Image (cartoon, rainbow, N blue to C red; front, side):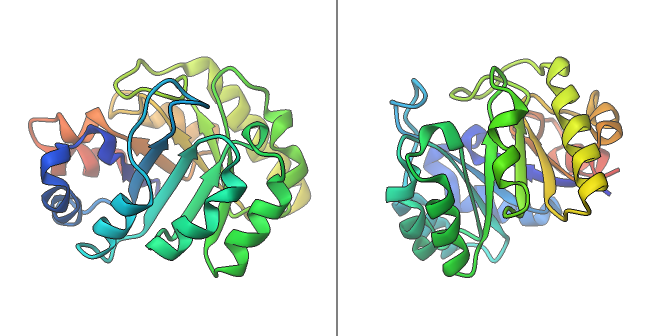
Length: 214
């Protein structure tokens, strides 16, 4: 069954504690936290203080997706703030291996992300080291974008590689996922689906979550 990780980027920023409490009531699996610095991506969202605040209000896994430059400077701080999973974009790092080592040293799950306009090759050097591979199906930096189905080719390729090499990393698809395309996402080989607007803007968020846990 695919796990659903709603992105709180689509929640009301004035009601973040309520948002994570709702996610538990809606039976979501993971809280996805989109961290943007205005440098690697054009937008700015939040940082370690938000993760620390959310940690006080939920026991759900917090997945911090760092869309920031030089993530190796900050990954330890995100772990200390309460993130359970920390992922970043390797091309934005000057020491991706070192950043992964720091996350692992904190006892947390680590991963790398491949943007919609980047090749899977960026992640290949790290596949035997990571717990999570994030494949973006929108361009990193903004919520509410349309799903880019052509990016699922990278999901299929990554799934084939892990089967051939006996690797155990999970594949997370991030961007524009909704009940209408979740079957396609699962067929490609994904284990986790990040969904923002599809959950928080739904008339029945709990039903939206359930409909994607297939």
